[in-house]
Image 1: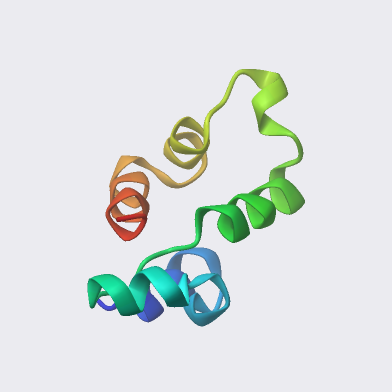
Image 2: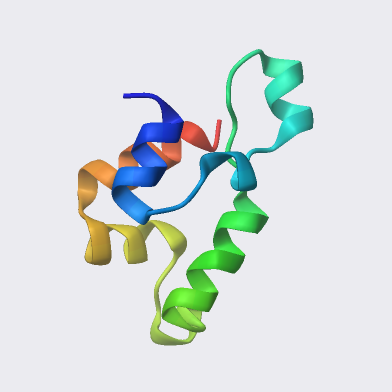
Length: 76
């Protein structure tokens, strides 16, 4: 599954909006921009750090371990 398909099916988002273009070009593979994705998570779930979550633990709780692992790979 491509990052574009994964983001659309999992989060109903366009991966291109969350792509780190500079790192992707340097590394030759699609890299997720952690700041843009974190901003979206905050819009959707609020300030999750106040409840003791990290991005990883929030993704596991809301979307499952497989999704969290896939996002981790996309972060580089």
